[in-house]
Every structure is written in structure tokens, then in C-alpha cells.
Length: 314
Ligand code: NAD
Ligand code: UDP
Image (tube, rainbow, N blue to C red):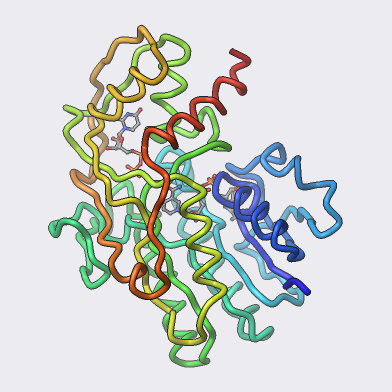
């Protein structure tokens, strides 16, 4: 018999893959999403499933239902989208965490928080281990997201310590794959869509800043595996991501090669507070549950390019 699982933000990029995987494992899935950045199309292939329910709901409002597990993914993740309404972004993280932790406590349900590498800000320690407290500008353009996620982590830990709620905190590093929006604004979707349309590839700054990209199937496997194991002992926080690091100029070159595009590279202004380096230290999650990524950047980009080609009808 499967579990009854609530996935907030389930119609988004990562959430849609997670809902699919949980259904494949015979669980009942309630996907709650306000469809701000998520899309019905992402879960269109699941709507027929008797175990799947899409509910239009905003996590800044309370939610009551009976569940065994909760995955809290509700929050815009692209800088373009989370900076569109910064107050709403912080409310989503903070009020969302409060409402869902209350629900978890009432149901004695295990709850996972989709936290982020952004809790490290523009890191002064490289690669980033979980013990690093970070370097976040509390009043910069990314603060609504970074501080919202940091406050959510604090709330998760308080519910764990005060009420013994079984929490899981995952600090997700840059993840990519099919079901990202074409207008998402994040680097992988931007570069691929630009390359496929022979438009200019927009590198912000000199392109020497780094990120480490994880393919979505690896991430989802780690999320589910962490929720399936242990009891109170796996609260985390755990970094999750692919430690193979690349510069944005290197990524542009890779995508140009894989698409065979004739786009040219142009440089645009680097956004304020853009982290210079980012790479996860994943030893903690590896030791705790044996998770490590399997999909190479080449393979993952190949799948993602194929997805966008279909979206663009090429
Ligand atoms: P996404 O924007 O595709 O998905 C977010 C989903 O949350 C969308 O479906 C959106 O409609 C929904 N949402 C936003 N505000 C909401 C609200 N108030 N109430 C209900 N639903 C709301 O982004 P994603 O990449 O799929 O990210 C999913 C989660 O993972 C986010 O919490 C994000 O912070 C976290 N994360 C993602 C990455 C990444 O690289 N993709 C990295 C770190 C953390
Ligand atoms: N970036 C870029 N061109 C784009 C979009 C993003 O050079 O068209 C850069 C951005 O400045 C950052 C990196 O790519 O250094 C990753 O950006 P993204 O928005 O994907 O994620 P985040 O900054 O949150 O890691």
C-alpha cells in the first residue's frame, strides 16, 4: 500500500518529475500549486492517474488534509521570477513553511524542505559544506529568496527540536532538465533556447563565474530516497547536487557544440550579488544514504536539448 503524499509546487519543473516518480511507486499524490511559475502542462501526463490530484492552492494560506508525507517545493526558483514580487517570495517561504510544518505536526507526517545552495550566498568557502554558515547580503536583490529559505530552515529545525517533527532539509544546488520553462530565465534554459534559435548567447559578466549542474532525475532520486529512510536522525541539512563545476563561458561552449548552433556569444551586465563560485560538498548525503549523481552534464544536456527542440517544434 502506498502513502498519501502532498507535493507543494508540484506543477513546477522539479515538482512535476517528483510527482511522476511518487506515482510510479504507487503512492497517492496531491499536488498543490498556485501556478505562478508552474504549469498544468507539466503534469498533463499525470492528470488521468486515479492516484493524482492537482489542487490550485497558495501555501501562504493554511491547508488542511490528511497526509503521510509532505514535500515542500513551493517557491519560484529563478532569480527573474523570485525578484518579480520579493515580498510574496519571502511570504511563500516563511508562511508556507509555517503552514506545512503545522500540517506535518498534526498528521505526524515526515516533511522535506526544498532548501537551496543560496543559503550560502556568495560563498567564501569552496566547495560548500553544510557546516558553512554562508555569506548572504540580507538587503540585496536575492535576499527575498535567500533569507526566506534561511528562515524556513530555522522554522524546520524549531519544529524538529520543539515538536519532534520528522524533517528533511535538502540544500539543492543548480538543477536542470525537461519541464523548465522556456522563459524561466535560468542559465541552462536560456542558453539552450538561444542556441536552438540561433540567437545571441547572453553571458552575464565575463563568464568566469562557476556553477555545478545536477540533472533532475538524480535530484529526485535523492529526495525520495532521503524521505524513505530513517527517522528523526536524517534531519540534515544535506547538500544535494552534482559537484562537477563549470564556468558559464564553458557551459555556453558545451551547449553550442551539442546543438551545432551558429549563435554568437555576447556579454551583458552581471546582476548584483551574483555568486562567483558554487560547488557542493556532497560527502554528508553520500555517507548518510549512499546518494551520488549518475548523469553526466553531456547526457543531461542532451535530454534537455531534445525536450526544448520538441517545445520549439524543431
Ligand atoms: P519552479 O519555479 O519550476 O517551481 C516552483 C513551483 O512552486 C511552481 O510550480 C510555482 O507555481 C509554485 N509556487 C510558487 N509560489 C507558490 C505559492 N505561494 N503557493 C503554491 N505554489 C507556489 O522551480 P523549481 O526549479 O522546480 O524549484 C522547486 C523548488 O526547489 C523551489 O522551492 C526552489 O527554491 C528549490 N530549488 C530549486 C533549484 C533548481 O536549481 N531548480 C535549486 C535550489 C532550490
Ligand atoms: N547567467 C548567464 N546568462 C543567462 C542567465 C544566467 O550568464 O542568460 C548566469 C548568471 O549570472 C549566474 C549563472 O548563469 O552566474 C547561473 O544563473 P541562474 O539564474 O541559472 O542561477 P543562480 O544564479 O541562481 O545559480
